[in-house]
Length: 459
Image (tube, rainbow, N blue to C red; front, top):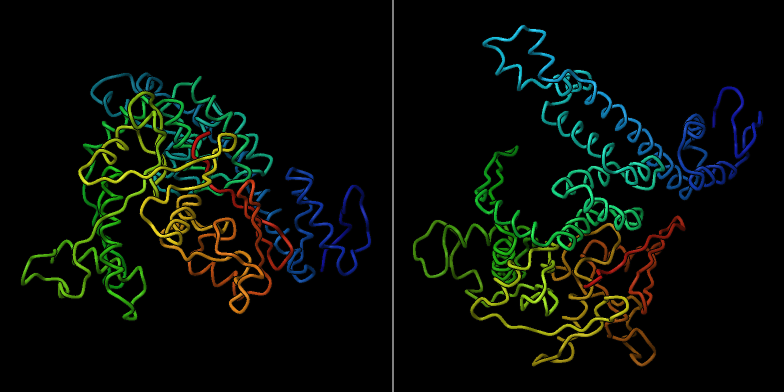
């Protein structure tokens, strides 16, 4: 490590550079201490050559926390710029009025100033200014977490943008719930939790906003590099879920032919649109390569009283998140729908068992684990559980099954193929699951621990 002058370690100033291993300890202390002006001034002493693998991860977290701290300062500055910018009235008065009033009234000097200063697109500058204004005016607690380095700017931005639809009082109630959750969440989990809390706090508004958004449905089609293109649609979530399940059913029927699952899904979508079942002479792949029409399974979890209309509140659409009660009822009462009962613990809301109905025990176990966890059990992964492998947390003993690693829900977790291979073949990664809370704890090769909490079906 090379540092000019003296460097502060811990609470004092030492003119002596730390010995091997001491830099790791110092960075670990910075991580616990949290970001601020004093610690920011010490970051130049972080020398990657002097850090172990564990120390590098600590240094990364320290830098990310300081990035959040700086972004909190930037939020404060952006909000001040927005507040002090010339108002449309100022522009009109300065110009003396006249035919240009219409143009002056739509002029946003703050957006233009920020866009030019930071070399951003106007839309990006406007988004930052809007988020900063909302955070400063309505979300002091969230901005505080950002300044403390406990959450990322992406999470803070999600709070500002998603809670904008609520009035100040209700937005404050939702934020109060989220403040305790966000430090332990990834950005995607925060967005999903925000949607859920918004539905819970304002079910009538959620229904109204959904009805207002339905007319916005439409197709997406834009070019990508190297002769590729994106084709899709914006449509109600329950319709998207049905389409996705139909595509997955078709894709699984292709068998093991060398294509990846994503390649099969893309090919299945093309086939279903261009050469649907029953159409001869279409433009797609041979209809004989697919599995034909099959029943579609869409999992919606909804409390019984909400399903029957006794109460309003969110339901949970697998692979999407919270949806309005009317959307859940549309799926639940559609022709051919089969209901299955899920039992949850009253105290925790965690799923504990599914009704076996007509399924074999192994099918019941698989259905329960997928319904319980919903996503890959790796902390940063959002792969839907039905596309994952079911992994034995404690390895199954093939020679002596009675010795452990049982095939029971408490010892199973859904893992996408990448994280299944990581857990199985990488000697440095380990995982354990708390059977009471459902929380899985992953230990990385550096010794750091990361937790993943399963969804709670009713809070």
